[in-house]
Amino acid sequence: MLAIFSKRLLEKLESTERIVVFTGAGISAESGVPTFRGAEGLWNKFKPEELANFDAFLQNPELVWEWYKYRKTVMKTVEPNPGHRAIAEMERIFPSAIVVTQNIDNLHRRAGSSHVFELHGNIDRNYCIDCGQPHSNDEIFAQERAPRCLKCGGMVRPDVVWFGEMLPVDVWEESVKAVESAEIFLSVGTSGVVYPAASLPSMARRAGAFTVEINIEPTDLSGSFSECIPGKAGDILPQLLPLCPQRSQ
Ligand code: OAD
Ligand code: ZN
Image (cartoon, rainbow, N blue to C red; front, side, top):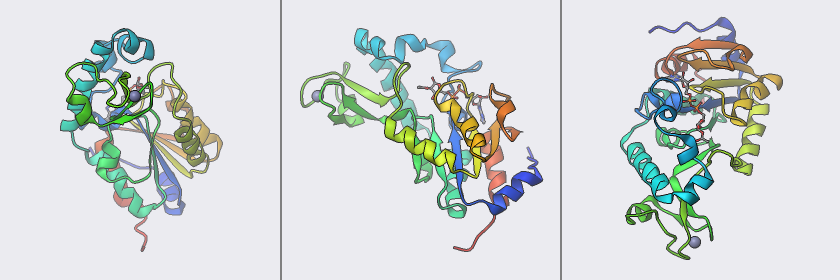
């Protein structure tokens, strides 16, 4: 569908150097990664309290690992979509463009984005809860049951943020810094209900950024953006890209 962009947004793009793109599960939906909420969302089929928190992991590591091995397998088979690629290409126009993502699927990096802050971790990484030793996915899949640390025998967990856990402090602080100095802030494919990540759009606006939401439906946060563009990320972003100023390098 042909997207219509406001004059204000196009003017902002002309005069901007610093852009932050904030993403959620919706950006990866067109790659075939299920979102969390909505009719087809993961949290309708699985209970977060049984799968995505540390106590659940300690109580039933086999179940939690079955779920994460399944998700790792899904993520391996998917590819970045035109939305991820358009964001990666923005770096040619805005070299300091930063992606702050809630996604753990690694698709922004695979699409070519080089400044990616992963607020909720990365499904390709794992570590021992006792000694911290990192473990590759190959080391995880080589073990049939819930994997054990190859160094100390402790329990290994995926390097993702679970409910009730803190976000990685350095990643969060870097993200806040980027958001507070952003001139344009694009929020793409997130329901904006999981905090503290969901506080970033209003933080950007308060700090003076022009904030835009791209989503297939209105969200809890829609009213707080400078403007909202309805539609699919993989449809809207590739149309926005050629309208960004084509600066000589
Ligand atoms: P959600 O599943 O809550 O929201 C996905 C959003 O994407 C919804 O607002 C959809 O309308 C929108 N959407 C779906 N398809 C789209 C498309 N093709 N283009 C644009 N938008 C689309 O996912 P998140 O907001 O990412 O946390 O969820 C936030 C956090 O909740 C996740 O990071 C995860 C989860 O619990 C942790 O695991 C800590
Ligand atoms: Zn260990």
